[in-house]
Amino acid sequence: MQSKITQAVLLSAGFGTRLRPLTDTTPKAMLPLGGKPLLLWHIERLKSYAVSEFFINLFHLPETIRDYFGDGSKFGVKINYYIETEIRGTAGGIREFAGKLRGDFFVCYGDVFNQVDFKKMTEYFYSKPEIIGMTVAGETDHPEDSDLAEVAADGQFTKIYPKPHKDLPATYKAMNAAAFIFNERILKYIPANAYYEIDHELLPDIILKGEKFYGYETKDYIKDIGTLERYKQVEEYISKLQ
Image 1: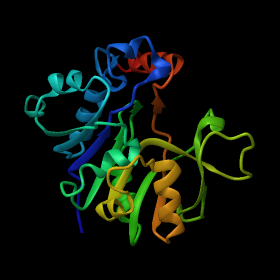
Image 2: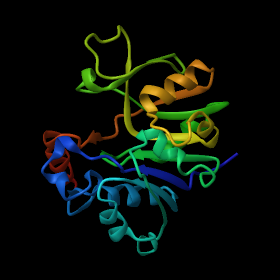
Image 3: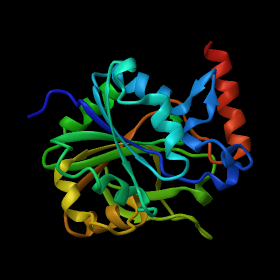
């Protein structure tokens, strides 16, 4: 069994349409926070938890990211890229790295700032037998446009409620897309050369097929920068850290 996770996928292909005009000239994952791009926050944080190799999918303004990070050596890591010729979705973007991802690996959405304790999340992951994956789950202040999950007493997901919602389920946990841990077995469920989403397609499929997927509950700070309001909230949070 792996004792630590050394690989991570950073999903960074989105347009960031709700953040225009900021994203007209800058990829959403490269927007500055506290004086440095959000992607650099991800790399530095995951590196501190032993991740040494990163995989980044690109589509919108890919040269901006590649020119900044290069092969990763100046940041003390290795970076692999894949430029999508058409948007593949969150799961489809991971599938492009099949054959290079080994064992267990992290996946982070490039537009979500997080302060997740990855050591504790990894320990929880390895406490679950026959697990194929895990994501951060818990509370949210905007459940109507969040992906929700029905969760058993032991933390295992039993049903997914993809966003948006006109009516909320009676009981639920919010699936926060800050971070996932996947085992490489999950790649066989992602079709090649196709648009495929983690929340709306991959997770419902693997749960239906009996795979064990869990939620990791935490109160660590997590906030997506998908809107100008949320982007400003993250900027304010970071200003208090510095």
